[in-house]
Image 1: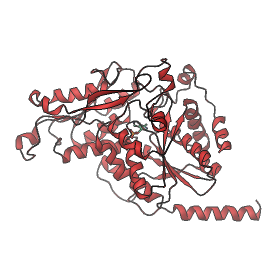
Image 2: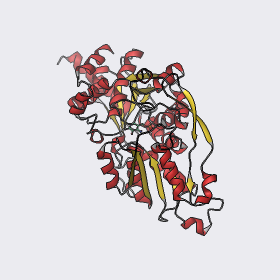
Image 3: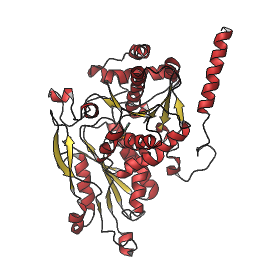
Image 4: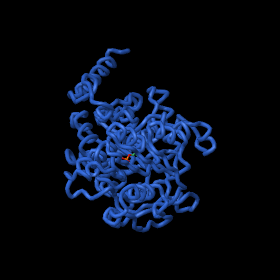
Length: 432
Ligand code: PMP
């Protein structure tokens, strides 16, 4: 190694040390936390060495897979339950039950936290969801009900079924008060997008909450529909948690924040917080194939080419990437759109390539949405022409171990005609 190279490496190291000497934050290592919920949040930022070294731009991942329920959704589940308790909608150890319609990690997070706080859980999901997810939920003591896949406008769609089940759990005489107002949603139903009406959130049953001191109501079992898509607590978990943590951990020096959107809670809450601190920070959406959001950001309408060609199932995001992408508007997506500066469409082939690349170079075994986010990081660096000094933060939502049946199943990928080609990432990096 030449002296010149040695010194430039040393300088670079020192600069990085200064930039990233993390201020002390409430990390978990030297404190005893109270139970499983004490482990939620305050996740470290991890430098993705292979990509950062190759690009000269710091690519940092928020290690959300370290949450006790295995994903970023722990933050949201905890916040939804705590907010419901604060509003008097849930009381622990009263036989109350939390209902949610979810195919993803949210069910696992709710089931985990519910048990820790004295509630039961019912999760309703389509019957084509991987068996391993059902097993995980059942192991956590959740009642799992599987229904036929259906459109969100159908009463038998799993989110609508969860809402109805929460209502049925309570007294029939409160049905009318709790069904909520009708709200309009734009959704993709082929091309172009149309507006449909569905029922709003915050169903709670088992009595009204006019007087939270009412002894009878305090001990009565309640049904609570968590409704992550519409529930503001989802946004707040990130606006008050994920966002401030990232801001502090990067010493307030951040060029961009990149995230996918499933409910939109992460990008809306984190993005809005970061923009409120410095509106020059770019907030960037990583959108998988089959999702209409990319076009919503770019052109103002939900639109997807595959969908409009009529080859795929309506209203469902057709991709091997799980957890992100959506074809309808929700409260949390509404909160996200104003802060999104840029969007990238990430193909299944790119996401798969990235996941294998990260195992090979970094020993990092990540889920599909994390892989999408990291592909978008390279695309942003390329588009902005960034060469060195900038910091990009993205979310590492969950680990690969949640994805054995599809994304990490080579046979499945072969059947789906998705090649596994790690050279794609090296080529993307070269172009950047
Ligand atoms: N990644 C994974 C694995 C997820 O399950 C989810 C939530 N559906 C997301 C990312 C997206 O998060 P959000 O719902 O906040 O948009």
